[in-house]
Image (cartoon, rainbow over all chains, first blue to last red; front, side, top):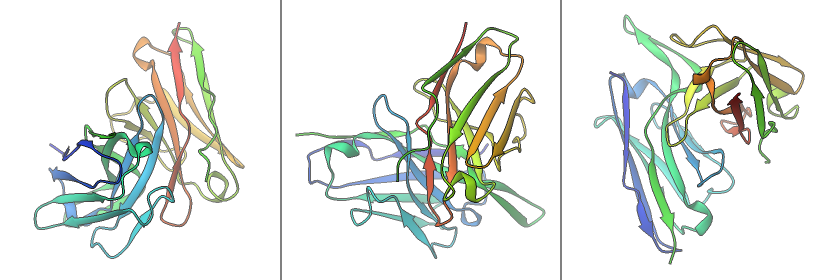
Length: 127
Length: 110
């Protein structure tokens, strides 16, 4: 079964740091880009960051650029989001999401969308 | 960059069809066919319903369809069912390895 499981959320003070993890299973993790998407309480979805399958490229939303870092360990099938200089407006449920696509017969094909999502982990920034 | 524009809410009766619009700019929705739609129930993770404007992932009902004209994409749900009541979000690739979501639309089945 294809699955993503986030962890690492919690309560942190403004200016603090937190590291989120996303454990993947059931698919060839290294073959797909991965993103983080967040949702503030009662609000809509906001794309946060993306990393390619081989970690060769990353990008960030302007709202987190310079404060957040994304990385992955393909040997552990795990995605990370390092969040620094946290602000109250970073309070949200953070979802990890897989780039669309599938592998078959040793080859993989992808499409630009998020086809698998984790259940989310809550990050609260408050004093 | 501001979120794509979606109506805050739409409603319809069982069996009817509804359409949710998603308006962006020539830099996002209008620049490619890389628009996707997601369904989200309260407290749950989003689910991919449409990708590349018109394509349905395996397992998604053919009652869901997508289209695009210029800078506006649309999601149509035909034969509305009670289980379709949820929030719906559009998403567009911006061409610079970044994405932008719509503000979301709450669908109420009357």
